Image 1 (cartoon, rainbow, N blue to C red):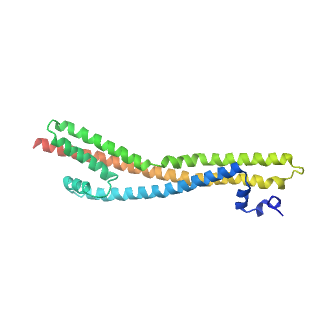
Image 2 (image 1 turned 135 degrees about the vertical axis):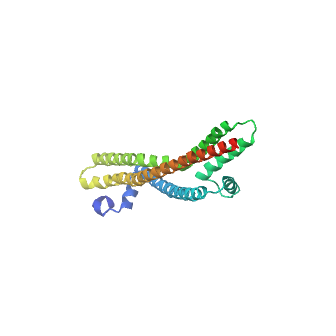
Image 3 (image 1 turned 180 degrees about the vertical axis):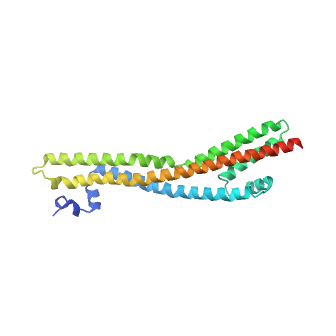
Length: 234
């Protein structure tokens, strides 16, 4: 008994896939690649966000412990590791503060706006870093079901065309072809569901980190403003 004569329940999934038409197999391959790629993105994004939260915790503890800002800045700028998150925002802001303070033509009133611009640029870059590849997860989550559905529709059309030319048209003869096509829809859902869940979760975590960075920027701006006022009054 060949595969076309076996009951659908007895057909191995792998055999259904190998017996599918070339276009349906291509759709399945695209979905498998999209699923694997989204898994890689999810693992990397999870690691990036975890390290960003840890770095923010460590730096804020040092910053609010009363450490001297100048020593903190020089300790960060002389370090070998790349600055990310709050460290990068602080370094950009304090570096601009030192540069403007050394320029004689810059008044005290113009120092703070320059510092704010530098920190906004750093915040924007950090936001872009955190949001990197999130659009890919959104794309996989939104398009995979439709790609799988396209493969299913095409497979069912092929099965019914073959059924129309068959001498003896029975459900048993067309069921394997329909089953092959429906696998594409199942694969589309398997690719989409984890991507959607990961996108929503990571988007929430990114938003929380962005809020945390922006709050630090505002608090650091207020701290520098008090320092500028005290220096100008001295």
